[in-house]
Length: 257
Ligand code: ADP
Ligand code: MG
Image (cartoon, rainbow, N blue to C red; front, side, top):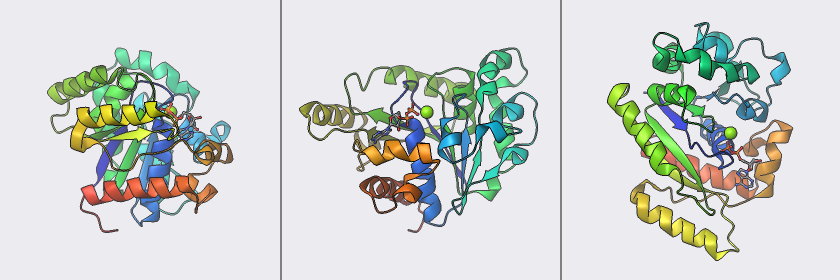
């Protein structure tokens, strides 16, 4: 059975895209088939996976608005077992266009349903907002993985996110759950980081991954080469920490390592 996971937090710059790309690539390296769906108009996951946006013919916008089959938008990346559906800037218009459309909340789900049997994991990289695009992602998902930056105001906005999850559970997807909470960009040299870690752990308890992602320069460099960390610097600490997260996720779903 496929597990469909939205990587979401309406705050920008908390590590959603970095986590989607590197968790996806690490899971793929374990031999499981992964599809990454980019639904952020910024298309950072798209370029971070080495897909040149100017060459993209059809993207997730055409799935949501024109109802083309999602299979027509799939790119095979250079990484074995890892496919991706790109987003380009035209997706920025979708938020408005969806508002007046029929079945607007379930359009991504309909698109994904066509291909979901071909994958073990589908990861959706969400935009930094809680609008129609995120609602579509949550409606299409089994669970939400929430990256939280180990910084000031880490918890800010999380109650709003949890409320939106509850609304989607109530109206569109009663089985939606929280996959896990991931602490990102921890700066081990500051006390602040440690305090935020404690605060998040005491609030979310067992939902918090044991793996904490430190601030690592190579993780920020990899996207400009269009590569996940597993390709850009396979032996690096960044690659190791995302592999350790991948193992936690695989274990949680009873997958062999
Ligand atoms: P989001 O998708 O939530 O907006 P990103 O994943 O794009 O966040 O991360 C925001 C910025 O921080 C990017 O420039 C990214 O390369 C960088 N970054 C993300 N995670 C780390 C990390 N663990 N260490 C260093 N830089 C990181
Ligand atoms: Mg992003």
